[in-house]
Length: 351
Image (tube, rainbow, N blue to C red; front, side, top):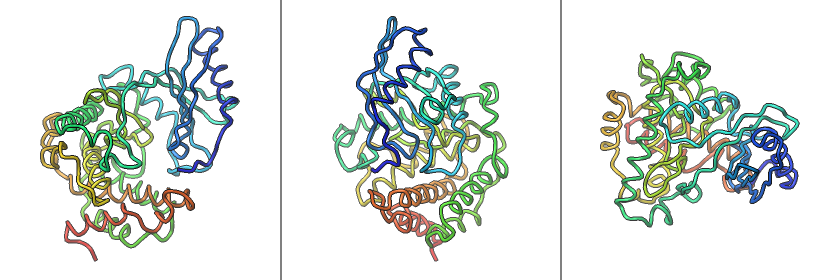
């Protein structure tokens, strides 16, 4: 995947060295080595992986920079994203990377950034999707099933966090009331920002969402917002870290359940590949979600459609950014847009 910006890694190393020396090593020299920028980074904030060593410290770390210029989303609060990560890492049992600090001084990289622990483990692939083979597709179904349940449990722990006590009230924002009303308003605004003429299936998906919008949630919770297997780190079938928090919000926990189910479907069945044999069914997953969260699942079909349209919109934006790259043409047609049509067919609502 192409990137909108390629930084000089020697300069990045020098700036990280300066920051780490002042922030973590009390002015002592810091050695930064093994600095890399993953090939898939750039649109969701530049990310650098590295090893840092100093007198009294030896850590593998990650630096994430606020998106600038080209970005997937029109707006999000980078500082509040870190605030949520920091609060969950230090005050809850959600499996998270340790946090090492947030920097607002633009003299380092021109944008704010934060540093967190680089957690040992493996991440299911998005590109190509894990259903296509490799790990964990080549593992026994028992391990796949363990990953599914452990990842879902980690996601539901987010919902039990007391977001008010954690000082995360700034996330309770947006047009409309928390839940479906607000997320539909956000989605409509997001699509309008991407294009004045969205594809026909996306328009039909929005129309279905408007016609079937459930009531606002009475007791909104902290929602991860990008709840999927490929945003987690695993060791021996257990989720040891939850990643990617730029869509964190206050709302209906069924949104996260829908992300968990639909992203697995669209990245397997939506590409004409079978789901991994060890993964539980939709019905089993919803039942377990109810057990873990202690609340009934009432509007899953609506949230699944919302996730399908949202993912299609994200790929539309990537299609704009990567007109000559891996997502070329996704702004007008993609497997995600076609999956919206499939879901409309399942609802008997396709025009």
